[in-house]
Length: 214
Ligand code: G3P
Image (tube, rainbow, N blue to C red; front, side, top):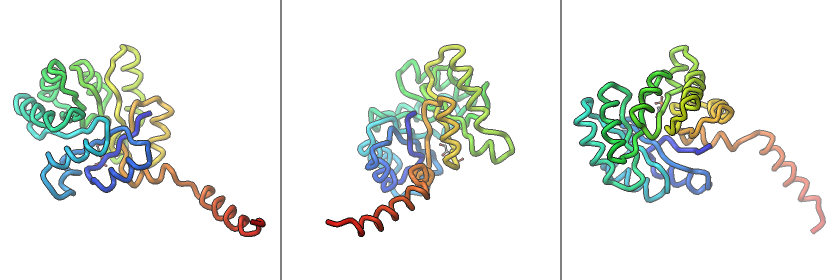
């Protein structure tokens, strides 16, 4: 499974990159609003740090505007993926962009049928938001399972990015289901590596090492 980091913070991206496990980055307008600097410069800097897909999002609501923005964002770097919201106008834009070989990540996906439409339009990636579904008493990971089954049934090449991840269990479930990618906030990514028994084990080994003749 590929691991993306869900942030526009360059320090976090550099740190996660140094762990040797990072495959890509996703951003959105909210994440970019938390950082200082021009969004184009930030996206370019991210592409210099991570050699993998880096998502930047359009804010137009009409397909013409989305395509125009997408073409512009795609010029930032060869690894840029353009996030398009899952609307009917978004579908039109995805279809046009897929013909122009601009990678798209269909975002704000909350149902298997939305994911089916996005794949049919030719999206490169689809992003179901599991945490936001959990927040309204729907089981986000159930939707991921449905999308994976549908894509397998019909042989779609669209890759599933499990997004809006809130805790490590989302990632375990995604991996068990065979999701292609998880995009993970920095704090959750750190938690993936941690285990109290590992910490206790290291403490004990270090204590015992003091008793070993050297
Ligand atoms: O990648 C989408 C993600 O950023 C949304 O996460 O936590 O705002 O629901 P959240």
